[in-house]
Amino acid sequence: MSTLIRNGLVINATGSHAADVLISGEHIAALVTPGFEVQADEVIDAAGKYVIPGGIDAHTHMEMPFGGTQSADTFETGTTAAAWGGTTTIVDFAVQPKGSSLLSTLDKWHSKADGNCAVDYGFHMIISDVNDESLKEMDSCIAAGVNSFKMFMAYPGVFYATDGEILRAMQKARETGATIMMHAENGIAIDQLVAQALASGLGDPVQHGLTRPPELEGEATSRAIQLAKVTGSPLYIVHLSASQALDAVTAARDTGQNVFAETCPQYLYLSLEDLARPGFEGAKFVASPPLRPKEHQSSLWRGLRTNDLSVVSTDHCPFCFKDQKQLGVGDFSKIPNGMPGVEHRVDLLHQGVVRGEITRERWVEIVSTTPARMFGMYPRKGVIAPGADADVVIYDPSSTQTISAETHHMAVDYSAYEGFEVTGRVETVFSRGRKVIADGAYHGSTGHGRFVSRDLNQYLV
Image 1 (cartoon, one colour):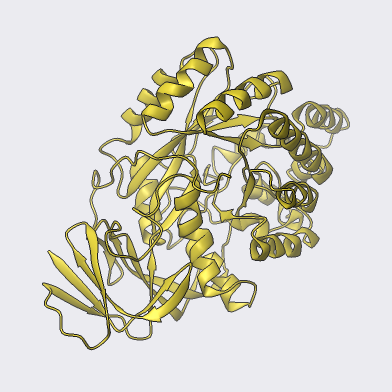
Image 2 (image 1 turned 180 degrees about the horizontal axis):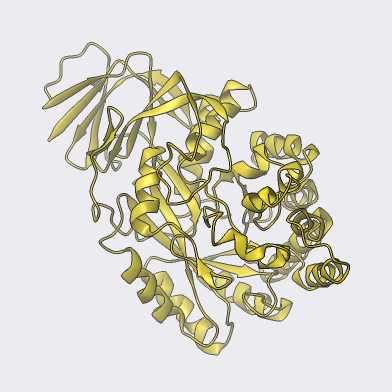
């Protein structure tokens, strides 16, 4: 099957130009000068529309166990929702329980995802148990196409790693070229603040934000950067939310250190005020790091413009308000940490274009091209170019829509962006040449998505 997308504006990270896009089978066959006659089985008129590479969400948590429950989206529902939002590849996290091996964990996550995904997928590995055996297994994970390893300076007793354990994992990453991803919050200090708040009878959701102050994200980020400097390891700070953490990343990058960072839409658009909504409504916005006071948002947008923030991922980890979030009524520390967002990332970041925060090209870069290069999928993905996978989105920049739980496709009973009016809409989505979204309907199928074996970070110097 061949498809010709005519009259659209092709937007890549490197520039925009009018071109017709010919898809043949699973790949982009050619970019054609407008008006040049090309035969195809199907012709789509994209006049007035953008033609962009499919989004890559490099931080999702489907079917993730947490706090006695698990995230509400399965790999099937979560990747279907991703497709609706113009995301054609996710990179999810395989979570190593303490006492288990990395390879058995990877096998378990393959059993969850393989044959169940609507779009392509890869894995990062969460290391929660650093020992001689797990360090050796990092080599086997890399051979299996998983070469990014997440660690936690938060959640003592669950995922927390000591500085010594982080140092050892970073030394291994330096040897192999793998990237260490870091949840950078000072979990030891945070646990004390949480205990003090609860002892004082303060159990409302807003306390989640107040007991995880931005200074403790900044401190942990600085510490992770110094450990990476000592070891020579690449470092990727996940879900950066605070200006203090961004300052540390910026300073490291200014010296040429291999330090990278992502932020998430919730930190660009939501704030501590949402955590403080009346009653228990603030529980909908409990995630870690927490939402920050609004003044942090301008710093994050500036970081996106300067590339000190290189990627916007979602940290999609949805828990239903009813039954799941409500586990923490009266005790904010028991609210499952996470928010839904995989369906709306491309649209929300397009608002940055509408508002003049970023260019169209930068929009494509942060939602597709940079994650493709950062996590070893470029040029298979992340670009509209001959030979690339035909992960293609036709985007209407002038259409308007209102985000709502009533219309989204994620398996969660609320939207963190309920009532947000946005300009721009995903119109048509191709995943490896197959039309999965068109005419307001889903045309994909469970099992179409394939595992993506990833190469090393392409930004390392």
